[in-house]
Image 1 (spheres, rainbow, N blue to C red):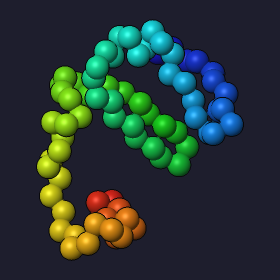
Image 2 (image 1 turned 180 degrees about the vertical axis):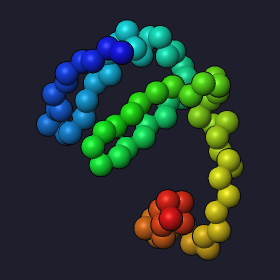
Image 3 (image 1 turned 90 degrees about the vertical axis):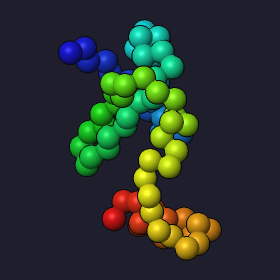
Image 4 (image 1 turned 60 degrees about the vertical axis):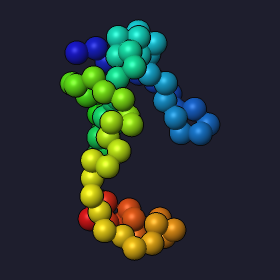
Length: 75
């Protein structure tokens, strides 16, 4: 495991080292966020982000209420 320290920029973002990004290529990545850590890793299967469309079925009558959609998705 390689550990790299990074500062957050003024917008609260971090940069991922270019050698990591080059190795991942055009793969879709998964980001897991918990209280104390953020895990970023590429999905094993190579796919395009558009391949994930319609992968989750939800029942929301009105998509204009973002909070209701999030509640349905995340419980």
